[in-house]
Length: 546
Image 1 (cartoon, one colour):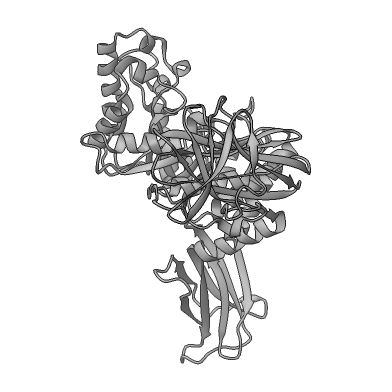
Image 2 (image 1 turned 90 degrees about the horizontal axis):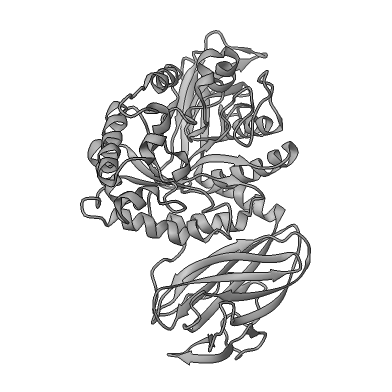
């Protein structure tokens, strides 16, 4: 997790600086030079040494270090930053042969140090140059404890696997016994997962109501969903005053019938492009009345039936409601939402916070600023808030994704990936989808994942999981592969004391004794629930009797 507090002194550099030379500036300006139109100098305060860029005549005027970066490596980056005045965004940039790569950003302050955390990958091996930039050229940029650590793809995957073992699984000892309580050695224990505890799902649309093949394919895989369009304002009230919930009602009934949890998406969309004509034509007063009615109508109707609400969608990129109701509009709407359904988690929902390091509008720092702005609005102090990350990827930058999640996790609210998809050709989509899903599932603070692949005969939004006959595409094969990996079935043979040990994902299982290749008729199926333990390293013991 990122240290968000502004500290009197910076921490030591991560990984001892990695491949950065002179990361703590203990050797003067060795390996550091001027970048752009600026001057740099070495300073020391209370024993702490750092580099300062001043007399900056352009945004990229700063300090720099030349490096060599390798293709097929993942680089985690961090630095501690301070500015001479104000609250100023500072970005870390790598100039490479193939272009400029933004590694991350932070809002820095004077008289204390803020941690900038990010990451990058490069398209080709070659020389690169790290520098810092800020649009405010009047401030000095101070930098210390810089780190750039490379990992091979194998090392990165190993870290993911270790994290999954620690955070998503428990060690379980199953003992087979006969009716007299004697252990049964050398018998097979069959373990079948019934449900995965981790919420992993996919968007759906109204096509599922009339297509049994779609229903069968979907319900055999997913336990959580989001309706693609059917709850949106333009769908339920296309004409002013004529509210129709019949379609989302039917979809919710279908989901309930199949024990599929539903996220409410969305109450208000801040993008002016997705407003009904009648909404656009309203005066500010009438618009306020209409928005309040919309919040009250949909959230009252589905109160207690959903696991989440995306309340004001994409309010970092867009400001339609703010243009009508003023800058505090989002905070006000979340206040109304909390009063209407205070027991369901209220999410912000944005794109490019973890997908694109170059989109400053939705950077992790800006996302947290918006979250805090809403939480600090009078009456909003106790709202159940959540972070929704749409996750519409092109080429994933996993180090930046992980660093961004570290920053967001400091808010201590649930984090979901809400609309995961990948742009590109099918083979590339499958490769990148697997990378993204593994990274998300391995991150301890991720509380759920929804893929944005609702099916229609004309195609999906950007990425389908099946063809029109519901045969898996390569992306669908990735989903099935991971579902099997994260659960599925397992079998093993007991030892001399009747024990079989396994590492099982959190979820519900049925356990049965198998003898001579068939289930023991005298053995009843035993139900096993594997839940997170309070203390790590605890081994659960479960007994099954023949």
